[in-house]
Image (cartoon, rainbow, N blue to C red):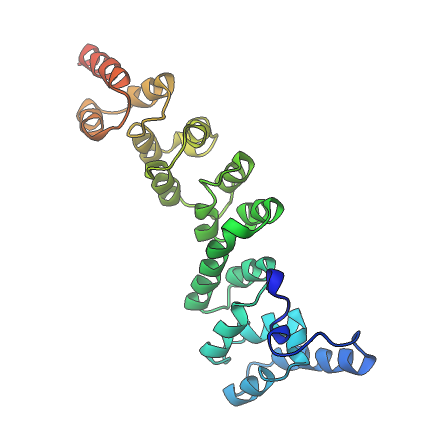
Length: 237
């Protein structure tokens, strides 16, 4: 929902402050949505109730209900706040395709969300969102994303190999207490043009000579660095 407001705002103007009766109705709606035996028709009817849809909690619970029609869940998700999308994508009971859609919505919004929101997402969001933030223009965001517990080795390698991966990001990965010790990530760093020579030497030192030769054959390291590594390789042989 971000700047769009609640989903109900797309079809009606903001009303007065919630009344006790409205609060009671919303509480009943939330209690109803905890039931797993609701029919799709009942959920569809709730999804057409402007009063109910003024509640973020109702919208999230409705979209997450296992029997909510997919088209309704997708419509609701398009108007979620970023924090609600993040929490939705992390719910273990939500269908995989809806989680994926919520993550896509977040990734699409990243260029327009605030620094504070990006830091929050980098810290807590799903793998896909954290991966998209690895190359954020703000170093604080990319460093926070590297520490996201859901981030995978494959996502870090993909970011390293991206043409727009900058020297600052590669430098951080080279010294990261977790990722810099992973063999496959070291191989990726040896293919990056931004990896400092000192780190490249350290990473190359523990690789079998045949593997290092293959890596250097496709590496984008500066020629001076590759020449130094080849000389070191000959000395080892």
